[in-house]
Image (cartoon, rainbow, N blue to C red; front, side, top):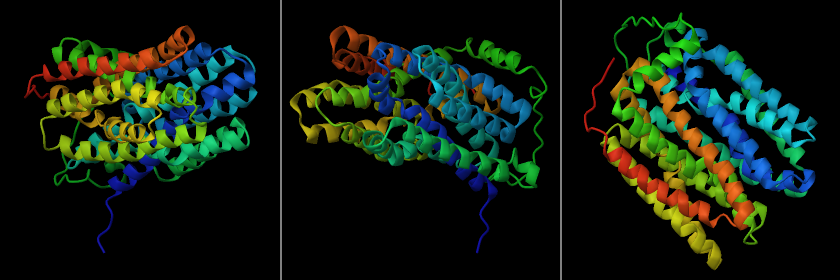
Length: 416
């Protein structure tokens, strides 16, 4: 029997770690209404906390990439998972809205950052020579896996017991992953005497940035990136990507459904149903990104997502479950499918060793869009008592994103 290459074990550990961090972030929509009911906090304030969390974990991305270069994969994964656990435990002690902003907005946001920003491209770039697109697609799909399995479970626990028990489940998963990382994670293939998957020659690569100041390294990467038109086009399209995914749908979809009389468990199940197709679509997108012009992949992804977001309010107003399920399928296939082509384009334009940090800045733009939608959605609901305008705006933003990506040159320069 052929021995499994350790790169695939690293991929599996990273996959499960991203699930743990991803469910902490994806669960915000499940906790919004319970927090509002128990503490009497305004929905706009709760949305602000969730928005700050999205902002912090996005903007920490390029610095996490620099810290990875300095301290290595294992130490950073343990430190990040530990930070996430501290934030989750502190949730039990909060009783004022500012505490939610600090705990969920800052601590949980920072704890999730490594896993949900630069871990996927870092593992794909350093542990794989072949099948990088597929590896990226699999890791990106892991956020959907947590959503698929756990959101309905969390909603059921909240409905039958308490939101505190639901937080306890997330803590348990995070503790398990902390110890798995401690026991089995490795920094590089060379550390265990192997080559990256698919590499046949031992090529020594000098990472001269690894000894520098992580903050300087991160901003140097930004300084290099902003001189390229492609960076602005990718960052702009990813802003709209974040606006239309975890910012709006991830935070407000469940509450939007509840406003039309759909029970919380049903709404969470619909969101997890998107996760099924998200996992399929993102993995397939990773495979396609190794074979098809990534610009055209992104063009169609954004266009179809925009159309589905515009149609959702009509489906909810009609109370047509069939059309809501159709939305879940099309939107789910497209939810995070944009990530593998975006990472691939970043790698092609800026090279393997710069791309992790520069993609971190591109992802920071994604999270600015997400934070804008998370807070803006709550603000619009406070004024209009509906999310409809927010979803229409997100659909229009996706159409704009499709125009951005098609302006990127077909064969950008590659810097290795």
